[in-house]
Structure formats: structure tokens, C-alpha cells
Length: 323
Picture (spheres, rainbow, N blue to C red):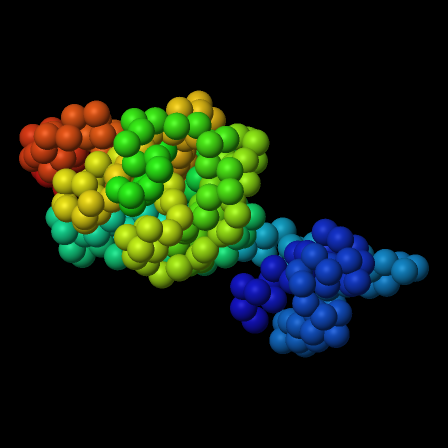
């Protein structure tokens, strides 16, 4: 007899019906019947008797349940404590993202300071990610939309303007800003498999009463722009970052004046989660990283990786260290 069989018998006693008990336990009725009969044979006791369509406990069955239930509860607590201990000692952060330009960079930088940390990406839709968060299969989501659920917290990390990237020969190249309606008929260039970003960019066109003449999903959008074809949407902080690294060549960035044309990123996690030092440290890092990235967009000379600034993380002993 094992704890699983005891749990089966307790469920049968609670439901008073084999069919309902089997459905509750997600096992076949025949497997359930075989399990409890095996216990009766092993103990030499009759635990249930029929009363019409239902089954009820015998006196021996009541004795069994009275002493068996605390054992199951204790085992369940034990398994929860084991899982909690595993989580506390885990050095893996499991995440979902539909943000293609920032999330990988933040993780690479975090691993530079904490090489023992691993990141595991969860693939699926936002709806899949919500269920994975609720089940505890992933630790966080980084998404372009706020996730609304009573058991989840969705916190805005980024809310920044968007830049249009064009070739210097483009008619807009000498402009400092423009409105989306002026982009009507332009070719929109985006990364392959951009997913949610593609939806966001097309939404910009719709809200601005414009439409793209063509949407091109390519591996390297910059090549298309360098060939004087189309436009690229880019978050302001990403544009400044790329510009500092000389990754844009002679391509020109133009601010979009429409107030709705902003890139937002949300950090979502489960309410009442355990205060795991690893996750708390990474959450603090994300908040600091994106705050500095957005400040950098206004102050290009800011040293975004200075040691004694807001990137510092609290250690368990109360001292501080750079991530």
C-alpha cells in the first residue's frame, strides 16, 4: 500500500461514488476500483459497502480514513516543501517574451555578472504564458501588452517614444518629426517572426489613419533600408543604443509625434510568489536596466554600466554588488 492508494480511498469516501471519484482523480474507474480492492486484500478489511447507487464507508473504512487522511496531508506538505526548496536553490529563470529587441540583451548582461544563472525561454502565445504563470511553470513574462488577471501582477517597465528609421535619401530624412498619417503607402520593414511587434506596428498605422502598401518580414531589415526601401519602427532607447555603437551607418531616425505611437513593455509575475532572492535580484535589474536605457535616450553620454549606480543588487548579507 502506498500514499497514492490511500489518497484514492479518501477521494472515494468523499465523493461517495466511483464514477465521480475517478473523474476527480483523472483515472479510469477500473484502475480506481482495482486500487482500492488491492488495499482491502492487503489489509484483510472491507472498507466500503454499497447503498443503492452509492458506496459508503464501513466501520473499518472510517477507521482507515481517520488515520490515513493525516498521512496524506503530511505527505502533501512534505512535497510542497521539497518543491519550494528546489525553487529556492534553483539558478534557472524561466520566462516568456514577445519583446524581440530588449529581453535577450538584458539576460546576456545579467549572465555576464552571474554566469551560473540560466534562462529558459517558454514558447507559445500570450494566453499560453498566462496559464504557465498561473501553474508556476514559468517565473515571468515580458510582453508588449499588459496582462490582466486577478492572480497576476503586470508592471510597466518601459513607456517610450518610437522612431522611424529611413535612408538619408528618403523624402522624410531631413525631418525632425512626423505623424503616422504621413506614412500612408510606405513599405513597412520588420524582423521575421516579429509576432506581437508586427501587430503593434500595424495598429500604429490604423490609429493614424494610414496603411502600409506592403509589409516585408525579413531577417535583416537594415539591409532593406540601406537599399532605400521602406521604413522601420524602432524604440527610442534602442535607436540611441544602436547609434552609439555605430550599428546604423548613415541611416536616419525621425521621431513620431503621435502620442499613441509608443512602445511599452510589461513585466508580469504571479501574486504572492515566494520571495526568491534570484528573481528579486533579476526584477530589480530589469527595472534599473530599462530606466537607464530610457534616460540614455535623452542623455546619450550616460555610462549605462557604471558600478555604483542603480544597477547594484542587494546581496543576502545586506552588502551591495554590481550585477
